[in-house]
Amino acid sequence: MLPYTHGGDVLTAQARYGGPVLDCSANLNPLGMPPQVGEAAARAAAQAAPYPDPLCRALRAAIAAHDGVAPEQVLCGGGAAELIFRLAYALRPRRALVTAPTFSEYEGALEQVGCAVTRHLLRRERNFDVDEGILEAIGPDTELVFLCTPNNPTGRLIDQELLLAAAEKCRGLGAVLAVDECFLPLSCSGPGLAPWLEEYPNLLLLRAFTKSYAMAGLRLGYALCADTALLERMSAGGPPWSVSTPAQAAGLAALTQCPHWPEKARAFLEGERPALAEGLAALGLDVVPGQANYLLFRAAGVADLKERMLTQGVLIRSCANYHGLGEDWYRVCVGQAEQNERLLAALREVL
Image 1 (tube, rainbow, N blue to C red):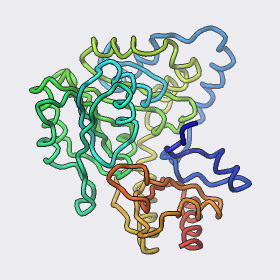
Image 2: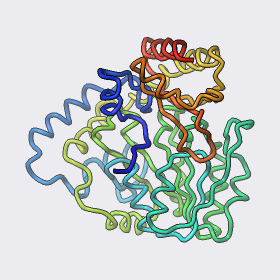
Image 3: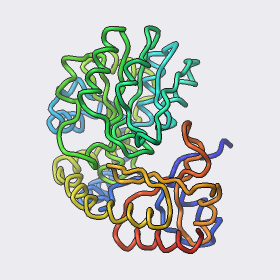
């Protein structure tokens, strides 16, 4: 079995530790799942004998109303990760561009279709920011570009004007620009790039309930694009019924009963993130000033910090598998105050 390289593998951590652990490796809404969402999923699970709606009609209508797009511009999937793979299979590009570091599933999906991947290296001295250099990196043979704002694992937002410039350049080359906005609702207000979809049919946005509503176990994400033919190809490129009845009910409840949940989390994060960053820096760690619900840091020369932390019952994310980082880079989520304190206390014990 291939090794699991993402955060949130709590069962493995518990088996190794020998008991419950504090999971600081998965980047979810620190307020947790809204009660209305869990209740809606439970009610739907009790009536889940029939197949789910394969077209996610009610959910797509709610997403369209919430995001200001047409329902036909929405494609739902079992998490954003599934849609990344569907996009790769729909386009089957010969060459694509990603940043380094960034979410590994972009490159993983591209490798599955035999695509040659170019990595645009981001620099620590610039806080790993995506800058105008990305425009030069989009070459004439580029057919697909993945960008993530805020980027995972750096937590840094990409300037919207730069994203639009990238969309413009991609349009001129006949390339698709896929912008992952899954963490955006927890990082800043506003509609993201959704208002620009009609102007840039080559622009595809990835979004997820997973992060904003802390419902990772239900697996629910969606893509937005004005190129409905591309969405149809993505839909046809995978199995039907990929979004379960409980997941559809949970997403509908999230948008109709608690649409301001991400906004509440942003206000919470504005208070807790600086305190956690200061605590990490006080321990001598090199902390990237992130703008999301997680922080990236380097423990110079310490390649086994994840293992050390597990001896304290705390799970953190090793970033050794991210291109552009080393084995002494790590990522932690921003949690409740008591969770952040426990994280810092464990770090004091092992460093």
